[in-house]
Amino acid sequence: TRGECPMLATMGDVTYLATQSMAVFGTVDFGESWSTVLPAQANGKVLMQLQVDETSAQAGREANTLLLVTRNIVYQMKPRMKKQVPLKFLAPALVSIVLPESSPDHPINVVATHRGPGEDSSTFISRTRCPTSKECGDTSNDNVLTSHDITEHTWNT
Image (cartoon, rainbow, N blue to C red; front, top):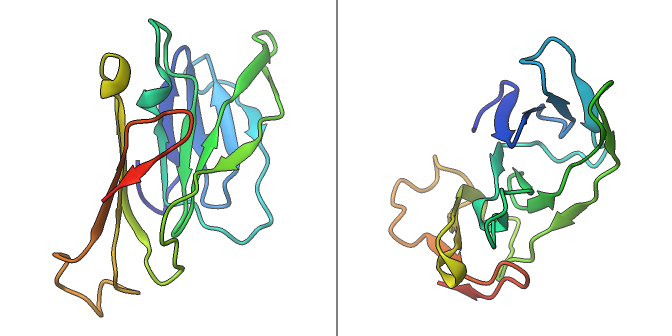
């Protein structure tokens, strides 16, 4: 999901809602009650995308990781439920994915993950080489980074 409104992603039995301040909430009862997964972050980063990291689904297991994407950083977060009634989560850690050439002047456009058998799982990140879309209508020089290693990302362009 991408945008200025709250973003939703479903992973397993939990639907997650994230705000631009990177606050994340979870529900298992279709939104009747919400529990805090991650409190709003005071780092000044604005959340642009929330999605399930499909590469975290390995060896027959369901995906267990969310990606939180800001203008320049992709964070991984593994929410863990403490108990279902009432719904409570253990405090998750935000882990940033280290990207090559991570210049603040090259914002992230798109992040996508693909789950395939074994080594066929991939993470794709598109970064523009222009500071703003107004300054660059031509995206032919954008970087598209691809990683097939889900534990230690090794990027190809």
